[in-house]
Image 1 (cartoon, rainbow, N blue to C red):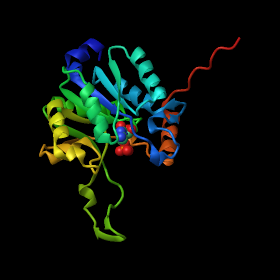
Image 2: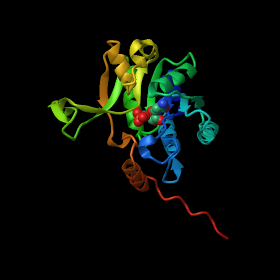
Image 3: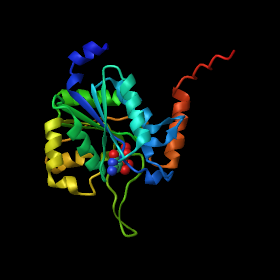
Length: 250
Ligand code: C5P
């Protein structure tokens, strides 16, 4: 789809918030996760490439750890080369919810639909962005991509199992999560937004009684959290990115 056509079909009033302000403690490399290199590029660069390739939004707000010059430079570079997109950087907060809120505050008033995306889901295919934004455009106020759960999941208290939920009814939740902007703002203004147990925006919607719809996610939208995830991401990139031409030597 050409850029002009896609603007006419509505992407001008869609904004993506990419949250990249996490510390990456579980990865254990001592730097923010978004700065970790994977196949020679930062996770944030991979994530932004996916967002821009999806072509669902004109405005991209990237939420960064305070004072991170390396990631600020990544965003500035992407902003320079991202034709037809406005790419901005803002500083995040102590929790993911606070970081999303910082992104929301930076969105231009023209934005009606917001997709919230974890930079850590750096290999998310364009199709996931499209499925989510199309569902919001079709009138759903809250949409999340999900995949089936392969493990049996137990509820545990102390060292004892108290319950085994029916696996067939369980789904693992990914991002981008898509929302009607006004509904998301109202959810972030509610009491639940201060609850440290809130791990995604859909939970705030649920707390406010808003129905949350699901669409198909994708295994490649996995969250890079551990060293093993990084190995998997490197292996995926080694297969999907064509070999770069060798620089000419003379
Ligand atoms: O910590 P978790 O794995 O839930 O983080 C998911 C996403 O939220 C990551 O992309 C991370 O950078 C982001 N995040 C953030 N601000 C925080 C905590 C997490 O932007 N304070």
